View 1 (cartoon, rainbow, N blue to C red):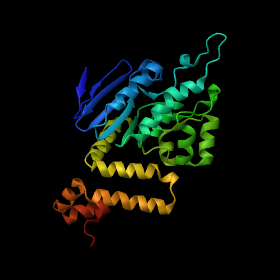
View 2: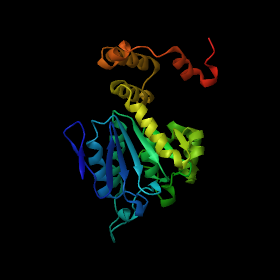
View 3: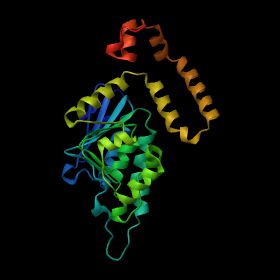
View 4: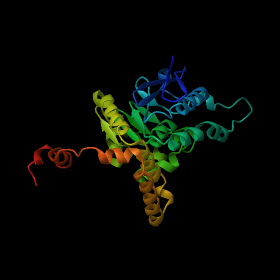
Length: 279
């Protein structure tokens, strides 16, 4: 069964991927729960096809069916034919690299809803997203070395940028399990929440993001993601260019013309409910 967004693309669920939507938010669910949502080639292709049809949605949520986000790669797909070693570099280039590039290049915010184990390249899919909201029971594992492989699916790039070289090396070399709460404390993920509140937190974040100006969201995401390649002067120029362009947008002009919020409401937002009597 498919559904149609505001564009021409018809979104369809498939054997390995379930697609659903609520208003401006699209949710993509990895649907191999009996295999802990491990990826095979079919799932790679069906996920990339699904993401390609999400251009008209303001926010995208990626998650896993059952009690796992994604336990990485289907190991049977990596098995060597008898007498003929398999070139795993071709597999990475054909499957994982295009997927990570596709997620990173999406203009809209992408939220990883991590409901359980996220291991190896499965963890790196989550870390490629803009937000990771995880249940406290979730765990993140860089498990490639245990299988005789080095990190892939962007892990060697993402990890040190999120947690620094020392922790990135520790995670990659030991394969130590990191609980969601520790991951949040380290800055590896955005937030760890009680499992019963996971959907509430993800839905609230998605709703908030969907209410914001899409062009401004896209510009902010693009500038921060590209900041690693800029010096300060280049970043200041990029900010000026983006603000100039956004200042002419209908979104900005309509928000500028909107009635201001009541003063008490603004103070409550900044200071909290106990400080509303401050001047």
